[in-house]
Length: 361
Image 1 (cartoon, rainbow, N blue to C red):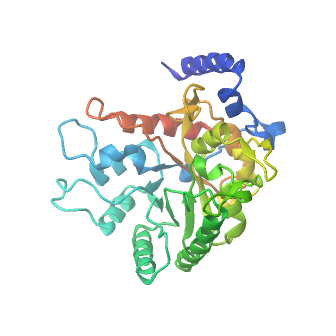
Image 2 (image 1 turned 30 degrees about the vertical axis):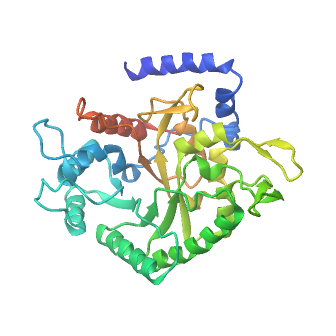
Image 3 (image 1 turned 180 degrees about the horizontal axis):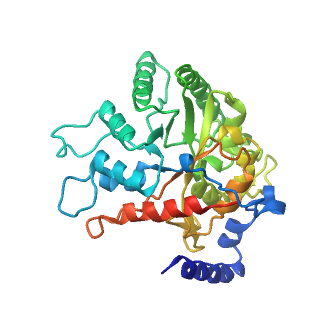
């Protein structure tokens, strides 16, 4: 199916969803409300400059980790990064630094990865590394080693693929903020921006008020979302964020009601665009992951290549502010095609790059 056919099909699906009360309606409500008056953007400028077009290697992890084979599909860092550069990508976010040991007879080193990047005109711009969950001499030393690797690879950002805490409780988010301010200061001392990558749960409502449960924890919410609370507690020049735009829209679909301190149900539709636009400089990175609306699944969306879903990336990038500052990384968790289709993730990488490069606003 070509792009125009897909677009027509998608519009028919959206039309069918328009009459469905519930999941799809919640998922669509409020999108882009921060910029509704300018939903098409102004002018026709390039929204993602060539030097800012990136990919997280998790999307092609099957080919990074693949052993040498006869498929003809690139494998390992050297061949896969060369192919990504050929497609047009300029920035790379890492999701680990290992490849199949059958390629070199041993594991590749960060210095060798850096050479591959340099040889292909690529720039490492982040990594889903391990950010310690506690502060001890050992965890501080471990984080210093993480920063060492980031410096070898030439990164400007260092982060993690998970939320600062999985808890719903204010006390745990308070503790996480203290920890992240410390590690953010350590990163800043090396010229790096520390970032946390969100999933939808981070935009659920904080349990911070109302009656206590048997363990002395609050059972109701003041209406503030967990990551919003974290925004306010962390230092703006030390702690940054990578919004996964797909998961932010899942959050819009899922986390829209809470019980207030008096026990009354309240509705508050999450607006991903407004969340970025009001603090745009704290979001240097994005995961540009697309999703097709499906009210029959829990998340409300299903992952598809960029440009083949229902998330309005043109509107988002045109209206989030600080045009040209941000670094979107294409991601699709389900891009690998397995042994039946070993080239799928790289094909999806090319399709997604073409859409990213074509965004105007």
